Image (tube, rainbow, N blue to C red; front, top):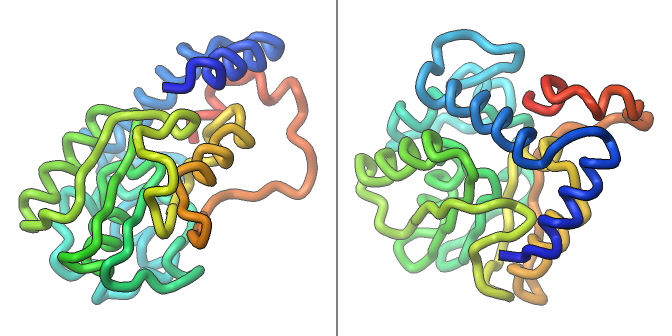
Length: 212
């Protein structure tokens, strides 16, 4: 784990009057609820209706267990940015309940490999159960943070991420980690939220604005 990066994140948040552990705990609690009670209703879209809104093809979801689909909470469609091909190695940063990882595993086939990384245990539990239910042996899920990915240097052909970068206080650190695990010829496919003007410092101090 890159403790220097984590310490830098902590200092940056401290300057805003926030604690990194407190922020991560709040985000974990929010997305644990999405995992454990997906029908509750949230201030963001979820599940199969969201997948349709984001242009996920019906055939992508064939064979993906509903326990994964129901807790989908992405903000974009990383697969719209480029085709994944058989045999490729994929890292899914902030994999949640595993829907994108499982779609990627189908696309790369048995000779490919997918590693999903997430910091929320309840989401990882669902993702692992879904992989077993789907009989996919070419995908695994690891606990970790985007700023310190548990993946070797230069391992991945493609790094995907969906609705996660906006939750990270140090986006540059996360992007550096994504670049580190990519091969020199690799590519980055991100679906996320963009803003057209700077976020006020007062808003950055509100944890509830970070969690969704």
